[in-house]
Amino acid sequence: MGERQRGIVFTEVNDQWRSYRARYHRLGRPTEDDVTLYEETEELGFSVGVGKSQDKSTIFVSTGDIRQTKCGSSLQTTHPNR
Image (cartoon, rainbow, N blue to C red; front, side):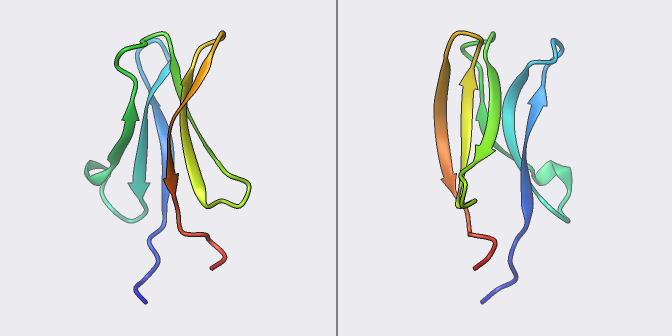
């Protein structure tokens, strides 16, 4: 089995300090290699958030404002204890 890849999922903010993009960075790699997982382009008043399931097997990307929230996508991850 190959070396386990480790990375982080994070959000970027715009000029109004509203998070609008979720990205993945593989540790040890240049930031130019970061991957955009989701970018909010239509609902500019929405913020993008990231979270994980309790067992850490799934990463959730969501968007929302003070009145509503949408779960945009989910990503399967390799469980860290396996």
